[in-house]
Length: 202
Image (cartoon, rainbow, N blue to C red; front, side, top):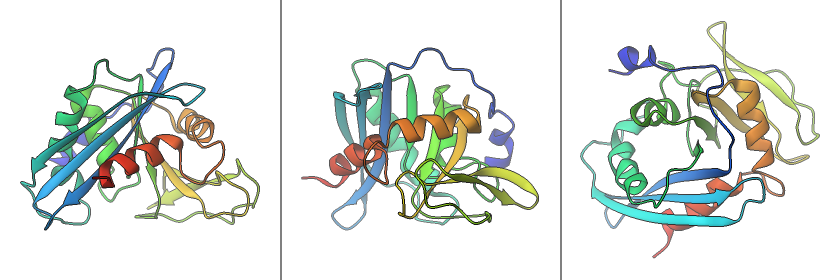
């Protein structure tokens, strides 16, 4: 299914004026049988809270590396459906094209919803990159099997990078720009930080 849906990913910019950005995160509740999905919508570019929702759904798919989207997306779709208005851009806490089959969570969610999306991961799943300068804004292409699948991006000087990749309807260069704009102070974008608080809260 991932290989089939991968053909529908759009890697060029097809997004209009971005006035709202959303962070998405999912955390397990209790013994892990329930998925708690959070969506935090922030105004852009000032990154003020505009909306936030939480949805819970029983986990219907086991935890399998590389297939995480099948476990998380049902609850994320429930959460998106609860929003008062759809955001202009999704920043997913996970991979996009930087995935063994080029179809991580950000691609999967973008294709299913038709919304522009970016993957912003805290750790490396596939690929290698060259030496990354210490300054904020520095980045190097992330290469896997001879293909550029994303970028290692320094969002804060002297701090470990994040891994940015195309989700859907956003080019890599544009994705890097938006991630930097959404991470003015910390390593992780404000969208991710807000969604994580919601996904792991009471």
